[in-house]
Length: 290
Ligand code: SF4
Image 1 (cartoon, rainbow, N blue to C red):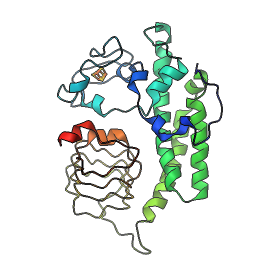
Image 2 (image 1 turned 120 degrees about the vertical axis):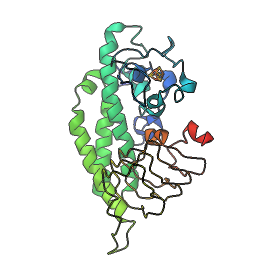
Image 3 (image 1 turned 135 degrees about the vertical axis):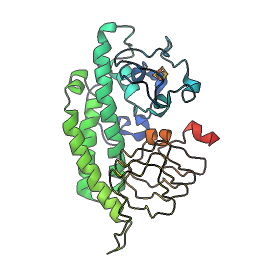
Image 4 (image 1 turned 180 degrees about the horizontal axis):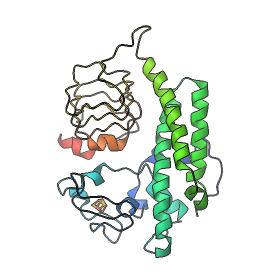
């Protein structure tokens, strides 16, 4: 049960502040290292079933190989981001009592984390949609959804666990798409909507050289940009919702006005100090050597 009383938070309250949607691993019981499972692959060096601690997890919930995740074959861990769900579930819903302190709570805690992680991610996107839109209707829908989700992640455990996350997800998706259309349209003059026909949602742009392409205002939602060359590109007004940025080259690119960009996308990409980022996102540590 959460320590704070359930109430309807305002969009400016800490529960809905975008900075509160950043991970605070020191206040989390390593929920991402236990609740989720992973398979041996390019991103993980071993198999781990869901609901069991990773073999690299230390008794104090820290990662024993934290400083060498990428060279040790755990890039998936270096990329992951819980959007602040870990500390919320650990300290809020379970009042600072870990699954090790009370093994009976383990399954509920892991289920709560999985639900909260999706909801916190939706809050991240909705905050941006609300900021970017000039349409009062879209803004009001974003505020309403933020409040509904804010109540769920700031409320009581049974309510969180009984949330219809899929239904919320489709409502959020519809609002995000409306705002995307509005924002992207602002990058075209009247009658000028010409963009390269390859730049579409879900496009396979793996390994493509996109450096000389006009990208502003493109809809690259869900596009495969794995190892794509976007160096020095201007991605203003580009919808990047769910785009796969693994090993994409972002050195010198301007992402400061890109739409729906997240920290895990940046963590998966390659960039440099010359890459321009939106204010709520941080330069990944591995870019310093890039
Ligand atoms: S390798 Fe480290 S960060 Fe990754 S799951 Fe294991 S303990 Fe967690």
